[in-house]
Image 1: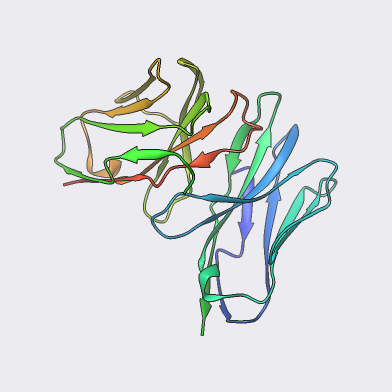
Image 2 (image 1 turned 45 degrees about the horizontal axis):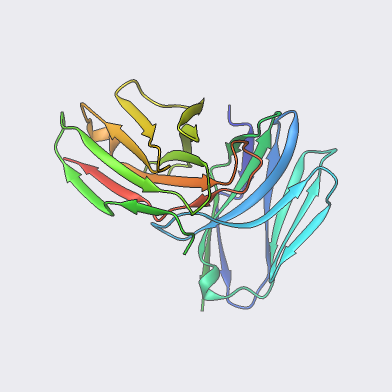
Amino acid sequence: KNQVEQSPQSLIILEGKNCTLQCNYTVSPFSNLRWYKQDTGRGPVSLTIMTFSENTKSNGRYTATLDADTKQSSLHITASQLSDSASYICVVSAGSWGKLQFGAGTQVVVTP
Amino acid sequence: DSGVTQTPKHLITATGQRVTLRCSPRSGDLSVYWYQQSLDQGLQFLIQYYNGEERAKGNILERFSAQQFPDLHSELNLSSLELGDSALYFCASSPQGIGDNEQFFGPGTRLTVL
């Protein structure tokens, strides 16, 4: 069983609207959580990295939240643009050397 | 542009063959990671090298092997290729050997096995 579960699997939103992606994890011990954006056929690009003590982190129109108690994270996209169409991957780093566990990703499609 | 380069960009080969994928990390990065991403699948960690030494192993098949050279570039060797090996192969690099470092991904090599 994957230790990092993302929902929804896919999402279609209208340009200009907001959306929220979810990530639940069971990875332990927790080190940090990252969100990556991956355009089709290209390498993932880091959006945010949060450690245990951080609740919120923003990168432009992307805002990630972390609740380490409930082991949940969300990524909020504000005022979506067509260029936001991509897969968003939640990655949790565990253990002393930080082994990474990847979620399957949420595919976001922004339509005009 | 992440600063990580991968060659070739595309590779088409036949079952049973052997191929080599190459990765050059960002300047100054000591760690290289290899990942496989099959169609509509998530990223699967294969192997990590740090400063020439194998640091961690993931879901890497015995038919696959990798190495990191003194100049820190890395190669992933895939042998006895099967149809199921068709995938995008990504290389990532980070400054140090621990996974906590942010990883910077290359553009990937698309392997098609016919």
